[in-house]
Image 1: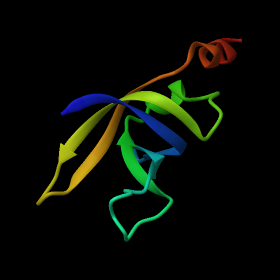
Image 2 (image 1 turned 120 degrees about the horizontal axis):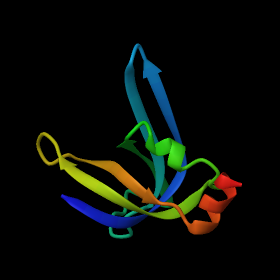
Image 3 (image 1 turned 180 degrees about the vertical axis):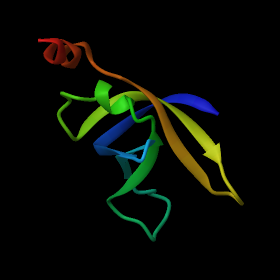
Length: 98
């Protein structure tokens, strides 16, 4: 299922290992207030396309941004998040072009 949501990115990394391109973002998420076993914030990893990091150059991190994400159901009830695209604010796009 694809949807748009606000995410807070703290960083991202990518690797090209023998032609296999891999990328991952690290996102902050607030603790579930209804769960007494969590407090504060936690870091979540999300897969993304290798080339998406080019679009994210010049942003100041951490940053809140609108993203198109794919929620993928895994085995059992596990879900993973894949970031398909990010909407870079115009002021950041202008800085990169300058």
